[in-house]
Every structure is written in C-alpha cells, then in structure tokens.
Length: 363
Image 1: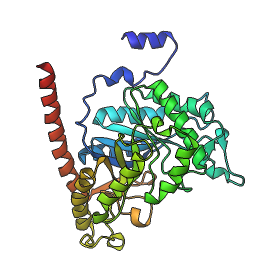
Image 2 (image 1 turned 45 degrees about the vertical axis):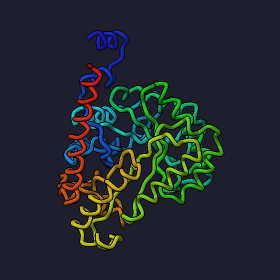
Image 3 (image 1 turned 30 degrees about the vertical axis):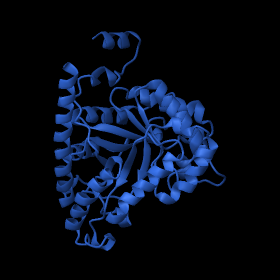
Image 4 (image 1 turned 135 degrees about the vertical axis):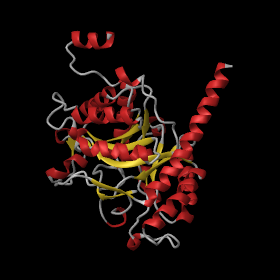
C-alpha cells in the first residue's frame, strides 16, 4: 500500500511490475525455453495463447519481441505501455521468465542509408544511440523491472533483413543500450543480438574492433543454431572458441533460435525425414546434444510461421498466426510432447537441486 499511495500522490497512474513481482514463484530455471515470435502489438488473445502453450511445453523462459516502435511510435513523450503491461502480467501469471528482444528504431530517431524506404526505417540504427534511443530503452527496463530481467539488443543484427546499420553502428547500440538497461535495472542481464550462423564471425570481428572492451557490455553470448544433428556439437564448440578469443570465455552461450522442420520437403537430416515424427525424434536427440556441448539455454521455435524451412519449424501447428483473421486453432505436434517430456523432467531436477541448496544454506 505504501508504494501505491506514494505513486498516486506523485501523480503516477501506473504501478510498476516490480511492486508485484516479489510474490512470483517462477518455474524452476532449466535449459529449455521457447522462441515464441510474440510481438508487443500482438492481440492479447494471441499473447495469452502463446504463453499458455509455452508453459505447457515445459519451457521455463519465453523469448519475444519488444519493439520500441510499438511503445514510442508517435513520440517519446506519449508512450503506449498497454502491450508491455500485457506481457509482464502474462509472465507473472504463467511464471515464465521473459527474454525481451529490443528492436525497431522509431523513425524520428533513425540514421538510415540513403534511399531507405520509409517502411524499412525501423531497421536503421539510431543517429545518437546514447541519446533519446537509450532513454527509451531505459524506460522499458524501468517499466518491466522485477518481471523482465533479460534483454537482447536487436535480433540478427548481422543480417540486412533485420538491421540496416553497420557493425560499428551495432557496437554503439550495444554499449549504449546495455548501459541504459543497467541504469534502470542493475540486476538485468544483457544479451548481444543473436547471430545467424558461423559465417557471421567476420561481421562480429568488425563489431569488436569498433568498441574495445565490448565484451563488458553484454552478459550472455547469443547465437542461432540449425542444422544436421551430427554438426551441432561442432558448431557450439566453434562459437565457444570464437568468443573465448574475444574476451568472453566466461559468459554463458544461449541458443535463442533452434528448430527443425516437420515438413518432409525441408527435413535435411537423414533419419529424420518422416514428417512430424521425425521432427520429434530430432528434438529429443538434438536438445540434449546442444546442452551437453555447452548451450546454457536453448529456445525452441514455438509456432509455425514465415516460409520455407521455417514454415513448419514450430512445435505448434494449425492456425497460429498472430495476424489471423479467425480464431486461433492450435494443434500440438509430436515435437511438442517431446519437448514437454524433456522440460518437465528438467524442472523436477532443478526444483530438487534448489531444495537441496536451501537445506544446505539453513545448516
């Protein structure tokens, strides 16, 4: 009551999630997580359905997009917090930790390459990363403090489909964004933007060269991994060696996008080419392989979306589009049940380990 009264006296109409978060009993933290493709401006019904299915899949965390344009689209003085508040409420209700991808620069802050069409300006870097853009990032971290404690700075900045800035632009954003998040929430962890593939090491070399000491600006290494089962441990080791050589050897490595198609036309691993059954068998083998190779957390694609290899990568099929005109019609694939079994076992193990630690501390 003291917190609420003080805010009302100050004329603040919203109550920060931190006021409620102390009572949240989060799911036991495990390596299994959900890459949901939930967006800040998705409908509440869609957000709720994806949180519900992610929780049922055995995930302990959920990754989603928090576009700054969805909050500060008009101007910084009139933020729309409705979508953010829905996410924090669902996070608490389903006890799922959120990794929020901060992306999409408001048009009035951008520094775009010449000739960039207006509809792509949100992919540009801010003209002054340490200025108003950083203040917007800080406001998001403050608004969600106590509920969201993991933030990723841009998704796949190594691909022009997602980011139109240079490696130096991204380095400046990572430094400024990290500082802003830590000012608002010193307990938050910052993820660098997820890198698409091993070929991105050349691009990342330029990011490191642009900002000496860059490794201090992020807490978690972030990569996207897809491929044949036999190659996964090698890919993980290659990433670990690379970041160790750049001063980030002690940082956890998270795979924030991982999946395998259920459409036989895109199943490229022999032995896993029989549709949804093959997808389930692949995940049962691949997830432990990644974790044993050093992945601290693996975010499995939650729903079918996009095109080609990705169109059937979700563990949920059916009408699962965030822009569907009709009601959601979600179908859980065999891969959903495979992940649920792994995730639930891991949560039981994590809960028992946590209980043992509490007993030891009391002694």
